[in-house]
Length: 104
Image 1 (cartoon, rainbow, N blue to C red):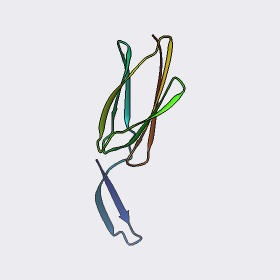
Image 2 (image 1 turned 120 degrees about the vertical axis):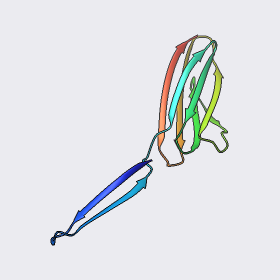
Image 3 (image 1 turned 30 degrees about the vertical axis):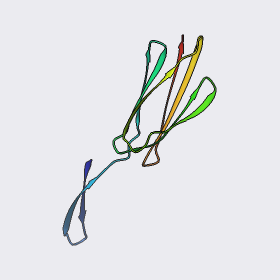
Image 4 (image 1 turned 60 degrees about the horizontal axis):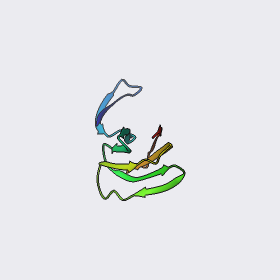
């Protein structure tokens, strides 16, 4: 949350000052780590996560997340090169994307 200050001065020198609390638009944070043979994916948003989709080695998936602002899940890797791309949309409609490749 931020505070917005507005100061207006008219031609007669009259000054009005207004202060208003606002919430800025933010992106969800995505963290991808490797834990043994798994990708560990952690997602966090200040307000609410709307949806999580990911691509793993060329296939697309949707994660059922419920009503939350944090979510964690794991995806088991295949032998060889693994590529994961996570796309998160928050309740403000802002998309975040993070990708990772790992040879297992």
